Length: 447
Image (cartoon, rainbow, N blue to C red; front, side, top):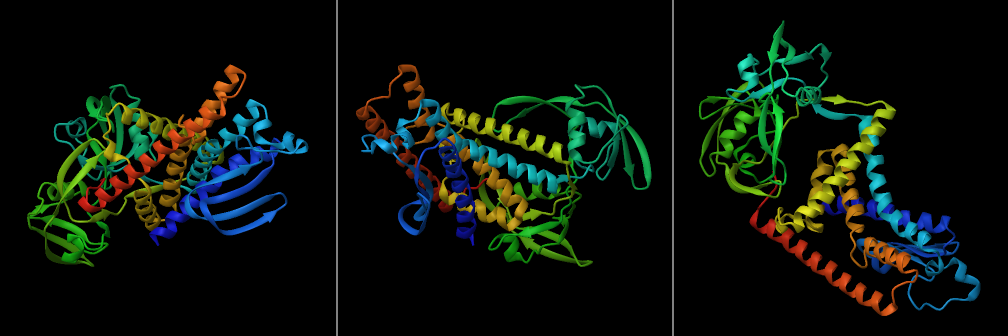
């Protein structure tokens, strides 16, 4: 099924990309000869009107073949007005640009429907509290449910984070529900130093509390220590080595700190207490592609303690545009950080990683699968805009030079540049395949 999900994901995104080229070419009067999903030998194909629509054997891309696209192509005088290379610079620019633009816009559409349908957001309940933090000093305890902050209703954990972020260190008045009582608690956020995904130091306002996540097993991965020991979905981990657990973080802290050490678990299953011994497997985990840490893992996932938050039409559209903008900017920044060697090159993934992650996200449900599709669609759009010959960005670069020079580059220069671009892309493909294979062999993983 992994291959099926990956083909579905890539097929849709390739179709969207080529559809951008195709639609604008048609609108601008350029004759389209072929619309192909995939490269290489044709598997299926049918001609409608003047265009052949086909599915080819190699599903790692696609293309729209237009009349007069190749340099030196002989054309009848009557057809030159419909040939790609005889169009003005701005028309050719639009045809090339709309492929990546469709991918990025498609992500916005996906996010729009996701926000309309509803997204799981952590409930506004206090989970793990850091010792000597503002939350601890104020008297908040695990399990408190935040009702209001400064008189404003709190619907989910995002509302709490927003209030803390916008406080600028001013004291916040929390109304919390504890058991059957409603209490008022004054909390003064503190400025704390953190690191972003690139390892750069940032300052954030915090109260030292995380959303509540119980030590209840949501999923057990096959062939892992948890699976072999008999841990099951729905089990509640009550104790590890006699230490009572209140949150998922309490449990993972013990597991992470004890690789290759047998641990005694007391779990609750259908009202009964069961004792198990599980030995966490030693694994190297990468955080944000920067920091590597050796931890113990047993192969479990939590049950989300979430509320479903649905957004009205225009707010969902606004959030879809905002999320697309944020991820597009983040993708560009990631590329810059790779060139600056802030991010190590071995964090780059390729087709094998996409296949794995497509299957993983699909197994979690349609929401996760389509969210992943939106992310890959943005990546595909941004990467295609890089100024590398044979990519759309390379063609846009050549068109920009042509607009400045008022004449195209020579055929010899174009062919040479295409060869360099092809060599770069093939080198990159070999490298990402190598990274994927090393990741499979070594078991190195992302948390």
